[in-house]
Image (cartoon, rainbow, N blue to C red):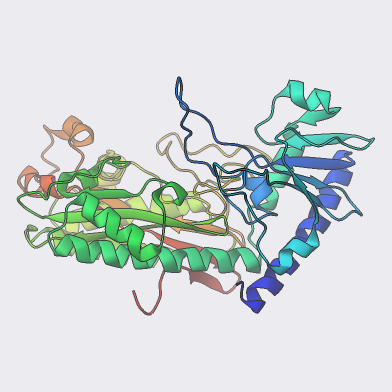
Length: 434
């Protein structure tokens, strides 16, 4: 049962969406738009399908991430029509609409068909995973670029309802993080930590917004490590856990790093140092702040951290200028977050102008100025990645003895999800119980 305050916030969210869509459709010259939720895809030469999540613009209206083969027709001055795929089926449980107030905002038509509904006369667009041929049969345009870009921009700033969903996703993800840490300290392998996470966050693996990264020891230095070892390593030096949750379609994306019982004495102070650096960067989040400049500040402070902990012998400025800090942290500081983990609009201005990342930081996913209502991740890191450090092997600027002591600890990443407000940052991840 949805809480009354969340139901009211969702009602305001849908009202605002209706007004915004009417304005955008009018500006772009459309009588309406048909949004397709999408469908799961079969593996090649197989009858099994991959995990599925509905198309983001459909989810912006309909909070059912697993709803496939459904359509939403949005027209100005009309109640949106939801064509809800609910076939009679004894192989699978038929989808059902929840008994929640938001359903009353739609005209609902239950359908067994997977094909799109017919469209009324006028100029229409169809958005989602559909072919130009199918759109043409409907007398509509498939994924027109200008309209899609304007709807993408509409998702950049979050409503109160969306923020509430993101906050709840964070709360549940944190419960998983705490349980995974307990499993690690109790001697669990990577798989044990993952299973503890799923149990505590009340998640199915297929419903997570991304595959959790559970890296013990050196695996924490593989940025998108994709396995879960079933055996506990002889030495338990570290755990890096990047784990999320999806609530009503909205995603949490949290990373924590913990020293293990066998960690080198150098490691715990590095975790504390990266955590303090991350907290300072979070405090700097304000409307009008350039995220590119924050990313560059992260490298300056990371250089000072490397010098302060004896991993680098040169100055912090030299560590940045020579690329040493980028070898210790090759990824971007963060990204927009919402219905997608890497949410839309991070590399374009509000008017659609592309904002490419700096040549020296190609992995940065957020390159625009911050605005009130954006939700961003903040995730500085420090890793021992041999292939990136190798080009500095002959450099005396790095204390290789200390680096080798940390080689089997992987790395450190601390990531929170933060709402930008006019008054400053609202950290959705931090809770009293953390």
